[in-house]
View 1 (tube, helix red, strand yellow):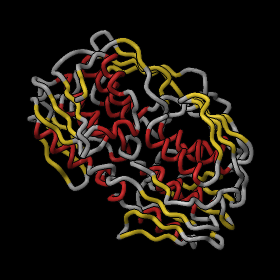
View 2: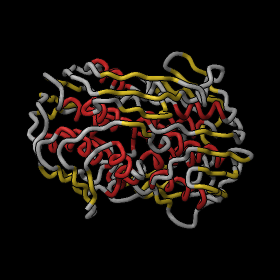
View 3: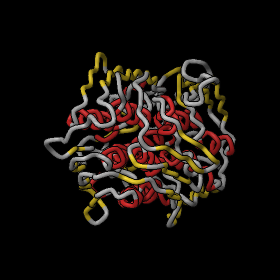
View 4: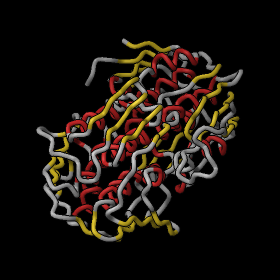
Length: 441
């Protein structure tokens, strides 16, 4: 556990305009696809957080030359589909579960051995749901009791599969598509519900042809990626903390600029609107080009203090808002009546068991709740008490309880917050700019 902690003062309000760092999911994928493309890829708006930098360093260890003229501006000199070289050491993914799972798909077809490791938190996270379909493609992958280290043996060639995901997962889907890109035949992936489609959009932007048929996606092996320019929008998952903050305390309104609003990511907006939130989305140009189906849509989001009411969340919204649930639970705790979330088992295998961590923290702050096997029931109240919260080293738990300070009657101490830097460098400064009373200690 790190010694870094937050001290969130009670009360306050938020207002003005702000933006948040670039999208983490898109930054990861831009680096990886740029690395195996032919030609150069320019990435602007790159998220220079620890998770994405772990991906950058791993690609460099695999022989990809990468330059950073500026912190958020990256040039990737692609080595082509057969240009990766074995790393002299294990590839350290840090806290980045997305990086580890996507690298499993990227490295499974390679003709050399690789080992993937991570920090203490990542080494406890499950990897078999990715390893299982990759083994069906004849990948040589070993885990340690289903968890890292992940050892990937040299491949003599992968074969295409037709695979139906047991649960909607962008990471598993992406790993199969990346492996399918370098397999013999046409790989089909069918998802039971829509999950993030950043990989499909970006593969298209790199010149790869995907065939879509309802819930199924097919990719023909052997296609070559061509270097391109990737403009990364501001991360919706990071903006989510301030969208909820606005609902709780933006008397005069809060405007979030240039936010990615990919429809496979914005379930939180639908849930908050159902709760009665005053939110307006203003789409605009930039990368939101109507003539390009691979473009990532972008918008300004305006939010005002709202009187929220509890809802029963439709399960189809769960995969569209999976990373936003910690801060959604903060909104639910401030709503009138009861809120129920089911079908969110995925939250138990994130950086922490997010259902258990949120239930524990809400209880500490005096919010009545009931932890379910696959969800959480919350009875809203008129604000939070003060107390000490264990974030369990989970960046989204830490930031969610920082937002709770806006409706707290006493100070909230949040422990073990160093991993906020993995996804949201500068969170503290952005929060203070918005109007939160928060310090680090």
